[in-house]
Length: 368
Image (cartoon, rainbow, N blue to C red; front, side):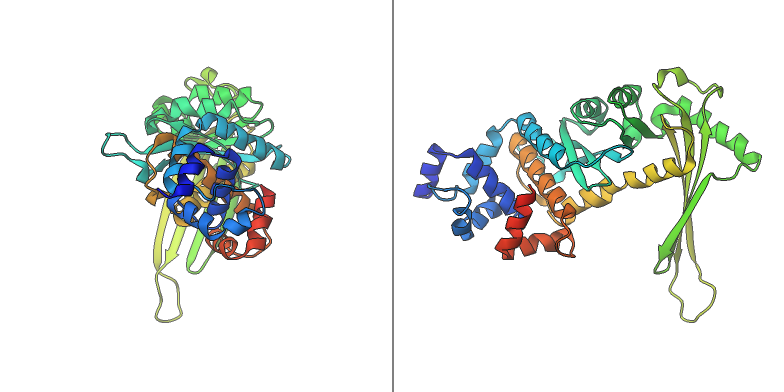
């Protein structure tokens, strides 16, 4: 261990550690080794912000310090930042979903990978909070715990089938929000009832309440939504779902054209998918379809970005608190980078730019 690492271990300045981690993550560093290397390369710039009297701590020191931070306290500070930058939330879609950090599996101790449940404000590209789930199956217990610490009044909370539970619906409505939950076989009785309800209506030429179509580059995508008010329909277990007002059927039809040697009618494949939703919103097909569409932003706008731009699945940080706290730093940075419109580039290239350009890095840091 280097001499200044020993001194740094004895004289840790938490604000310096946190600043180093955030600036490193902004600048393309994806683990504690690269964060420490960033610090060594940019120590002069860092000392313009904080003293760093004992230099830059090693990656071992960073791992130890992040392993000692209680994640719930760190996450509470993160939520304080999100509340400062949040805009008006009325009607905003907040998508809740889980993500597994595959590289965090510790085979030596037999511990599985870290699994997080997260809330993403779709309209703002803003991470609102996260909670550790000890097992993916425990999302059912983890989701309400996450929801109860968030400010959700006026929002529309969307959750995939795992979260289609009465206690989750109760947590959402208790927070003054509405829910749109995907209905699958984990609620088999209600699912069967809803399917029959739509089959009877569709047999009577019940047309979709809203349709949208988009596409390009040989692809076409059509979405259709039918919505029904549940009042008086006698759905099984209806009374157990707080605030339940409507059910919806979303049909997604994808057409992918095959390459054509000559001009003419396009050949290709068409795939059709049906999804059933339950909601505390009124039977407004357009609103329910839009909420359903926006839900996928947590996959495309956050989880895909974390895997591609931050290489999260390759992270070998396995100490539980350290892995969870570093994951929160990534999400903080992902939110700040995606919200910034100073340069026209993707998240990965914005991080590269921040690594090269001290002014741009400082600009992003000011947003935090």
